[in-house]
Length: 252
Length: 316
Ligand SMILES: Nc1ncnc2c1ncn2[C@@H]1O[C@H](COP(=O)(O)OP(=O)(O)O)[C@@H](O)[C@H]1O
Ligand SMILES: [Mg+2]
Image (tube, rainbow over all chains, first blue to last red):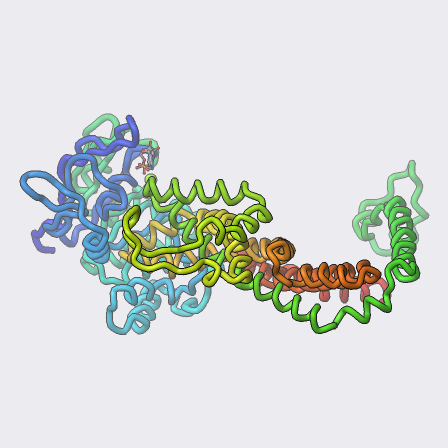
């Protein structure tokens, strides 16, 4: 683990209409760290995560990934949104795993994984995809269609797809929330394995025990604000803020 | 237990039978006697109708047989197919463009698309065709030049627009308005998560459309558009009003020359239109089946497969 900053967020603020969903969030995650974002439903966790690869745009503030402004550039003291092409380039360095997998249903698992590398003209997409499917334990499903897989297998395929461009940072939005309880473990095992390899991970999750075990940092969000953050063990075992205490008491 | 049930007395309404007897025999379905009565009545009417069709001299079936494959009729049929096919393709292309404009998020493009669909769905096709037919009278010269300024070169519209072209343009303009709605509904049916996943992978907008959105939208678009084409084939008969000898136009012209044969000639046209739309219906059926794959666990049986299972059950 080196000291480079992987994710730097400053003053992140966003409203949907009059509803302020993110309210001046600052956070830092160093390269190689695993960060868990927790908080009640509607806290703004997904929105925060989506601003990190510019799926949602900030009204105020900025996001930097590995030192580079995301989705905007600075010009004479103001931030200007980047063009499509530049944003695409940035997104290719950031993996995203959705709660509902969002696999492409008309493509096989293998085609799902090779789609992005082909689009970005990476060498030997197929060989690499098969290695990734091996890694997440569904190599034998390479030629199946997403609907023929269990939820756990689909999410593992989605993780393989997110890994296909060899991202420096991977974002997970409640990766196990849509799964039957007995399938949660297999997906968490894959994420745990990723954490060991030193890729920076940001995981929105309700699996507090998992966060306690795997995450280096925990960020607790409520009402669009960052209420409390710190080393996972501190925040989860010994929360300082009453709202954090209440939330952890409820979900543990 | 089994010895029990085999010696059990016949069921009485007032003495509840032992449980294992009730559970071991299949449920007897209710009979629906009225369905049989209705079937019989309809059958009698159908036979009567069929008999009337065949035996009534009014229809002149021998003349029908004579005309059915006459060269002018087949030429008309070919023209109908040609006009309908061009209009189907051009209408779909126009529809895709209109739908993309509508979904573009650019206010002016959306307004243009909306207005186009609004107008061309409102104007009756026959009115549109007659307008185009008189187009050469309205704009005898089509010219290329600066808008509102001098023209550099001009073409005579009557040279440019043969009657077939007028027919195809009219049908295509009309068809595009309907196709646009079909395409738009198809594109909108693709889950928002698919766009997000494609975005997150950094796919270009063109690639997203081509590889992710369109193939999924096609599942909704193709069957609906094939259905739309049945209407197009029939609507193509209106081109006879702009001097085109399509199937219907030919029949009308022949009917004027052979007034005694007008009924068999109309029957000839009817049967050919039925054949064309039937072919399309079969195509539509199989296209729908094809696109249902992957979305349904088991594909429903084809009519032939169903017929086979029914006859097997009945006569086994
Ligand atoms: N596209 C949107 N339009 C309007 N409101 C939204 C939109 N996305 C999210 N919200 C609102 O923003 C708030 C935070 O949403 P979200 O970030 O999804 O919360 P979380 O992931 O913590 O449950 C919620 O109140 C939600 O209703
Ligand atoms: Mg969420």
